[in-house]
Image (cartoon, rainbow, N blue to C red; front, side, top):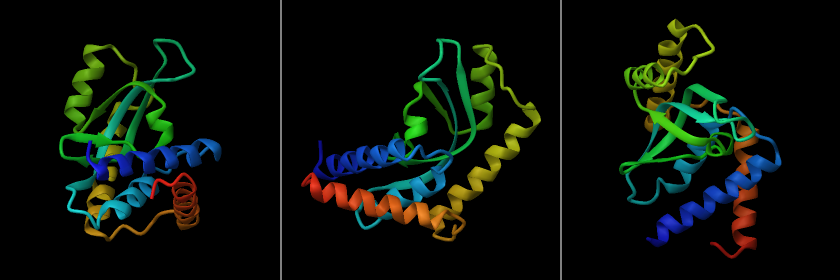
Length: 164
């Protein structure tokens, strides 16, 4: 495993520690932007991507699906890198980079959407636009206080643990 990949994995673990401790939810945009800001000085091909996520509730039964219709994560090479603890904690996650693939999956597996199916494409499209803006450096509607609190925590913990 490359030194860069190890450093990034340690950074993500530290982000998850912060997010879990502070019960952070619905901050995928800030989490993605923060991690991308950390790696953008490298030559790594990483970018924000919009995805739909299906996973099992970690505290539920084998049939308690959680569907996230609008989410932003990072694509690096052929991998999805998850910067948000609340999503990483889901069991048996499936990521979908298109509404069509998501629709095929839920139809095949008979998963209930819990929202009006007509709303899903607009939610997903909204996050596609957000991911494009993050990649272009033009998205600025994040919770800056949260962004910087997490950044300070990660930097401090990485130094304490001698990971940087």
